[in-house]
Image (cartoon, rainbow, N blue to C red; front, top):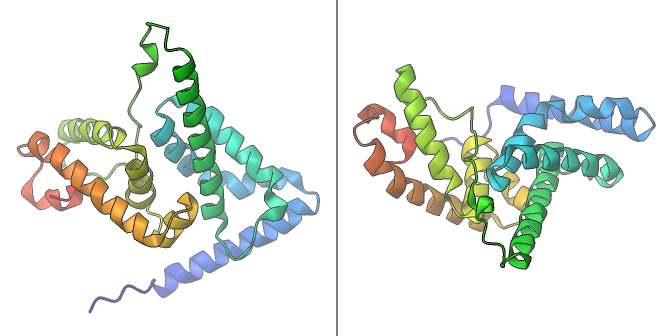
Amino acid sequence: MLNTAPEPSRLAEAEERQRQESQLIARILAGESQLFHELIRPYERSVYMIVLSMVKDAADAEDAAQEAFLRAYTKLAGFRAEAKFSTWLISIAVNEARSRLRRRKTERTESLDDDSDDHATVSPAVLTDWREVPSQLVERHEVRAILQQAVAALPPIYREVFVLRDVDELSVNETAEALAISVPSVKVRLHRARLMLQRELAPQLQGMVKPEKRRFLWF
């Protein structure tokens, strides 16, 4: 039976980071507001990437991320220490992205008489930290582009879970908390997302990825 318990060193690092964050939060709430950027700095990129994967627009993602940080600052007094700050922050970012997507859908519905389909042009999420599947530079760029497009094409509920679990590497519990869904739902959605990617990617990457590397692509 595999031992799935966290390594002692990683557990100690996580506990120390949480202790330092608790101290920072206490100081910020006591009036040292300039420390807020220090608090969120380790998570700025993760927040931006999850929002970008959802809204699929770099400028909109930047605005959404900034709005999420602002909301986190104004709600900081309500943060409960039993949750991880990173999970709480990401949940705020996810809600902000969802809100923007709802507004975008409403705006499109209200402009059905507009024949322009500019709104249909979207960019795939630029997952620059994607797993290094092949070894050669050109091959890596080709595979990465295909992966980015496939992830961007996932239905939102599956893309959210996939990005948090397999890109940002949040735990199942952290992902469930960030998305306000159950742990079983996380597992089911992640499984379905991987199956969708497998069906999409297998034909395209069959001759591009070395057999020993395919385990990273779930086929």
